[in-house]
Amino acid sequence: MSVLAGGVYTTYIVLKYITQLGGVMAESLYEQMKKIGEGLAVVSKGSHVEYLKAYKDDLYVYDKDVMENDSQAGDRYLWEVKGSGAGTYCNLIQGEKMHMWERPEDSQFYLLNCTGINEGDISVISAEMAQQIHLKIPARENRVPRRLHLFSAMKEKLGVNLRDSKFANDFNIKEDLEFAIKVTPKRNMEVEVTVVLLTDGQVSPIKKHQLYHAQVHDFHYGHQQLLEGSMFAYVSTFQDGYGKVENKDKQFFENAIKSLNNELKRGTQRLVAAINDEPAPKRAPRLG
Image 1 (cartoon, rainbow, N blue to C red):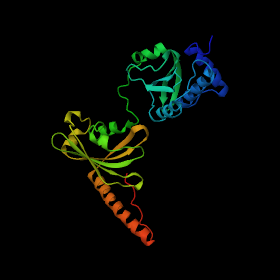
Image 2: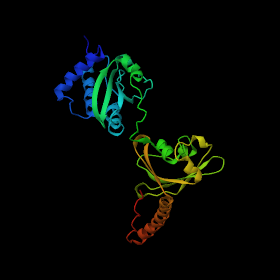
Image 3: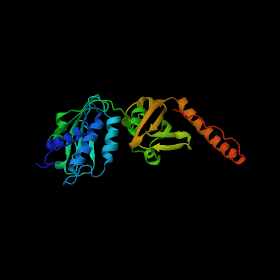
Image 4: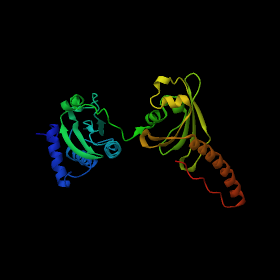
């Protein structure tokens, strides 16, 4: 039988290879995935199907990120090592039909059963089972995500959806940013967004953007408070569009404005000090 004749047989060969590396018992879920992926790449080299021939970051970056930052006890993931050789695909099973990628007949499919954060076991499943897995494993209704994409977090904490707004189009949000934000209700169901950047002590001028056509019934959480007045938050951004939003009070935002003005003033003082060869004034402490 060919090494690549079937998922179960292929995994047997891979597990034999992994045993030579010391096995996968008592290792993190990601380390188990890594050994399986690397094992597939080794045993398939030179065949008509070469696993992980490209897009290796799927395994070494994205799968690792999901296991370390998203997984939790009770989660189950469908993990595919693509038969096209173009990386992997890891997706939380949530009761919806899973998308099969290129050449699923050559792909290797696994069910990841999480017993904790980046902990659990892995079972090999067939392509047929993978296509029906959403019917066998229902979504967890009360699951609380460990992290949210930035605009989902802002919607939850500030009660307004900014994902498709002028703010999202105009304001260049990258990872490792920190900013104070104020959302103020205006006429005609619009809100005004005011932002003060706080990242690494580099404070830019205040950005003001309008969110047009934001209907009240689209507000998700905290909308009653938003209708009664402005809402304030401290926002930090992470890799791949994730972010953390912490509700703050008016005083926090006023301090951010004060910090902005002080930083601009110190910037002028530093320039003068440099010209006069004098010690530069210290930066203000970061807010957070």
